[in-house]
Length: 336
Ligand code: 5GP
Image (cartoon, rainbow, N blue to C red):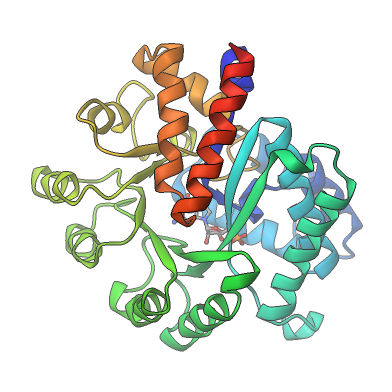
């Protein structure tokens, strides 16, 4: 674990509201009048070590009810960056679903302004600021309509020069239809943004095949595959964002040892270890590397290669990727 902690790492799959510190969840919940959920119940939900995917989405609904203000969004953004930097994450693509809450005077734009203020707060206050770079991915929630999704895609395109690198499709995989959000993803792609989608979290072979045929720039999870889909994925060479704790915790895969990381990594398919939701799954990127090392017998050299390979799967421009690789190699040299 100490080696994994010291290793400079890249985080490519982290949801802002899922990465909220448990202590902050408790605090914000206490501040609310008429709290949406009793504190003991919230504490029980957070401390639960295993929960179904359905229970996870209930927990997200609770978290969303306590992060309704701009101040809360600004705060959790700063804290997520603090936690990542302390874990030696040197580059992160943080994803979040911009939310309009008219009753709070919040629009999708003002939600993102709060995220940008959180990032600025982090850089203003931290001595480690030079150590971590961040880009944003705007998430489309599967509950959203085609218009709502297109709205987010347009916003992402407008904010391309402000640090928004792409779009993500996430949310409850049992809800909605792929065709609904595809025009928004097409629009983003046509305007030079990258796209990652959550795919194969539940058994839905038609949807997973359609997503693969669309050729996203990266794909998250892919737990439920048959031989045909697996071949389609291997042939595509699309990088996979894999989140071990999340998949085991939600019982999407039965155990760490049985996780598909090993099958894909051993064939040379591009994979990157990620956290998904550090708050909800009580994890960190170092812990995910350590879990993979323990489950699959990865040497320190292999872990280092894994961390460095992720540079190629970032949504950065080639020149930025080169600079990031140099920075990581220099940090690895110092550790040696
Ligand atoms: P937010 O986008 O509000 O910052 O982060 C929380 C949201 O991320 C959740 O409401 C959900 O839409 C999405 N999310 C977080 N973890 C997962 C996951 O494991 N699977 C899927 N499909 N979506 C997730």
